[in-house]
Length: 405
Image 1 (spheres, rainbow, N blue to C red):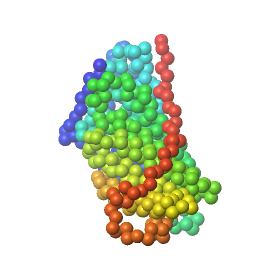
Image 2 (spheres, helix red, strand yellow):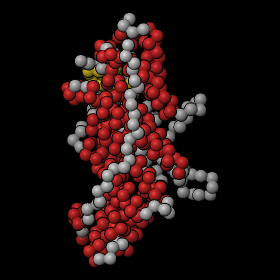
Image 3 (cartoon, rainbow, N blue to C red):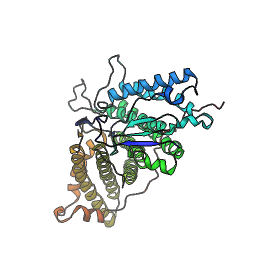
């Protein structure tokens, strides 16, 4: 049940892609936006008039806000004309809408297949996808809620100048801590989408979903949120005099696993339309960057050993860190150059520290001509990174309950 249709990308101008998205600390692959729906026409008198009016009002508000803010929300617009946040206002509208929407699923109601929902895609080749299935709408809402949270985290993690005499822009500790909470909330929405909403679709229906809502993309975005959360934790550990090398290495190694799993989930997916390819490039960049951090801290710990073998392994690890660091700079440039173009904000936290330390510490310990060795050769001889269990988990999010009649 639940018919669907997709509109080819060359049939209209509903999908508006900016040429540039400005500074990016947290990549958001565009915002899927909804098209208007006629609830009264679809359900007739099968629902109370007050419920139909409520659904219509809530969704119309979302359509208007999302279409106004969607093309610009990845930039640094922070406030509405009334002083509120465009991100939080739209997020709250979605939160208000979801429990009312789920009324259509009450007691397995056939009404869940009556309304024709249409959303404009970002990462899929097809411009928009329509489906007469309430779970398609729920999935789209959860995805948008998560992307709004990631957009909010991006705004918090763009370094700002302060009036305390510091010239270098910084990200406050308050913003860093707040961003971790936001990442966990976004991950919770995405985990709920994968575990509780995707199973509502048949295998055939799941194949018909846009790639924006494919299981691999949802899982990759969830892992991205967790990986970026660990990145912030590592940056705070670097700033703390109490954090040991072992703690920093563990965080860096966990970060590698999150990004590697994110990359694996995107593999072989038909990501398209600029946003999708840029998404793949972002994950590749952050994965290589995380490996640079992990090899660096692993090398420092190995160098504390008293044997010739441990010192040799330390040198190999630091070489690997340096190669990954150089590779990450190339990956960053490729990401920023891909459409829509972007810029890397001033460095802070983990990468600000490692940009200074990796080249310096590697050159002081590695006395060979590194030009004789390729990236592949150096990575072949690099010691295996320790395997730690992943500590950071998504916040648990449950769909609003619908009372049976």
